[in-house]
Length: 190
Image 1 (cartoon, rainbow, N blue to C red):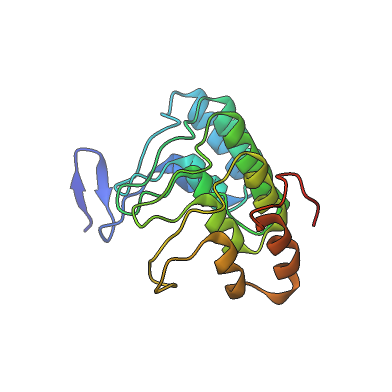
Image 2 (cartoon, one colour):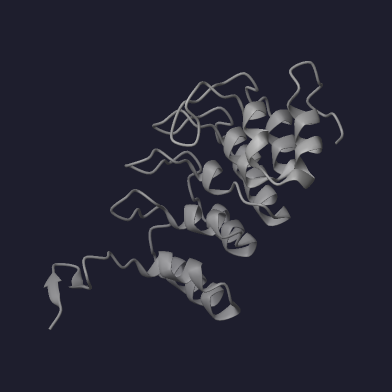
C-alpha cells in the first residue's frame, strides 16, 4: 500500500504533479489534458520539490505548443530551480529550432540572457554545448556576455563560451566560433 500525505499518494518518494506530467506526453491528448487542467484553475507556475515548473519541462523537451500555451497562461520565465539554479532559458538550450523559439519567447518576456546557475554557467554556454548555432546567435543578439567564464565539472580552468566549442560536434564548431569571436557583431552570419 502506498503512503499518503495531505495531497494524496506518494509513490517511491517521487512527487507527482499532473500539470508537469501532461507536459511530458508530447501528444494531442496531453495538450488537451494540460489545457483542461489550466482551464480548471491549475497553477501554471506550480513548482515540484526541486523548483521545476511546467514551462521548464516543456522547454527542456522542445514542446513548442505546450510552452506557448503555458506562456499565454502566465508562466513566469524568471524562475530557477532550487538545487542548481537552472533558469527556464537554460532548460530551453536544446539542439532544435523548437528550443530556439521557446528561448526567443522567454527573452521577449524578460528572461535574463546573462543569468547564471549556481555554478556560474550561462545560457550562452549551455547553447554552445547543445551545439545549436541558431540559439547561440539568438543569445548573442540579445546581449549575451561572450566573456563570462565558468570553472565547474567539465572544465578545470576558467572557460568562456568560445572555449567550450572544443567539446561540441565538429560540424557546428566553425559557425559557433564565428558567432562568439569577441570582435564579431551580434548579428554576424555563420
